[in-house]
Length: 312
Image (cartoon, rainbow, N blue to C red; front, side):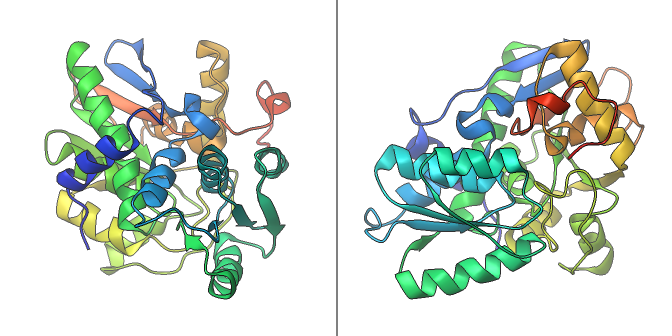
């Protein structure tokens, strides 16, 4: 299944006024940064969560349920709080404590179970069958993908006023964001997908002709820890000709440190992955190319921002 620009435009109309139009910062000549860490609940995920719930025929009386590495759960909890419905979130044991605390602060019922996202998802699916709650998948639902794509629409609009953009660089876990952005830009600009070397979900899928299971580890595992790329994401990025590049944990840590020290931007490791691709040479822009990187999340422990260590 492929999500289209029309789907993204309808999502933008549906969630308008409920999400923030986040800034597009010019970091240096030729480099723009879309600051989704300043979004409600600390990441772009609230866009897809709002679109999923608001697309339902009626407000779900049994509430909404989700499995998440942390950010999607935070988004669903925020949306549920804003709409006055119950949220039940399942997270894996790798989920950062700051995210678990944030979920509970938003009033969500949290269950921490399993080593990776796939384990938490299995538990959430069983619970959803018991309760009848609306399921908000972290990345493999058309409404979620279309909502995430509104980041791409905004980036195009904002970059037009700043001299345009040629390439948007996006971190990939399950692929909801990269699929949504690919649909939103619809061939107008190039999209480059960035994945940690230790979680190459899209990269391996492209090599093998379809989604496959991969190992999950490394500094960005809490947010980019899907063990398989979503089917919607795979189909959409293949149709859009998206290129995938890999970055090491050291490059992600260095980019996160740069965001804090040079721009005073708090980013989690996943939020720094797109910039890491530029800094380590995984993606090398052509002369004069204008690149926008999506700094996709800020749900991190502030005590680690100045650290030289690769703290998750």
